[in-house]
Image (cartoon, rainbow, N blue to C red; front, side, top):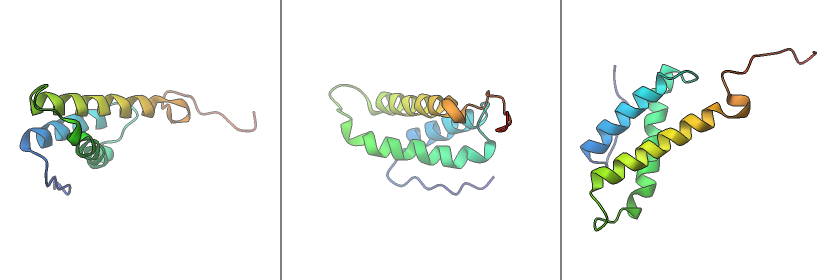
Length: 96
């Protein structure tokens, strides 16, 4: 599988974590495996947006990255299950 996403400015630990968590999320019910690259991009963008918030005095970068990526995965999964996007809802006729 050819990878099209580029991660300039993101360390290797974060890239491996993003790829792993995006793969896990894309295999969950309600997501498609084709969403994998899009999920990687969402996770990378969120990490880049939050990177300035990291304070080295409070903890290691790896812990910060792990927490940020984990929180975004949880947010994406929760938003995917909400309302109309809930894959568990049964389809019904609009005429009924």
